[in-house]
Image (tube, rainbow, N blue to C red; front, side):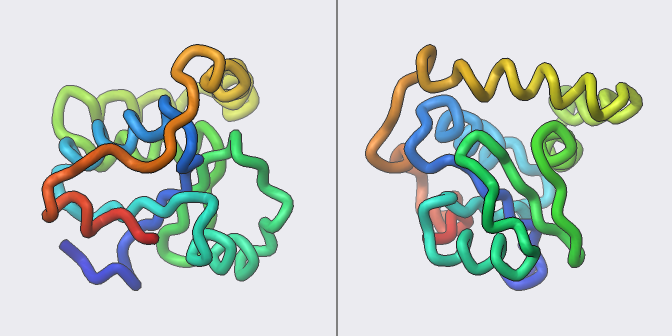
Length: 136
């Protein structure tokens, strides 16, 4: 795994059941072991968002910081997909769909995620090798 300072950071809603399931799913399928996940309720997330001038980002927005740039919403999700094992990484091909359409679908899912999956108090129990990639 790359160092956490160089690794892509994925900011997610730490209290969302869907988001937590997605994080566990991605951690287990991250082929390079490079993704680090940060709850949007953490000091690290506030620091990253502030440095990028994204302090107004709501809990419904997934953000990826990689190589000095920030990706939001569907672009962030497709970046994560590109790091996963086959067959999941094929989803990155949806980058060819115009962002406004991808983000519209993303918005529908994000607005309904808590109704469907509920809230959680903390991330699921993970093996230590995966837990170390969730930044508190």
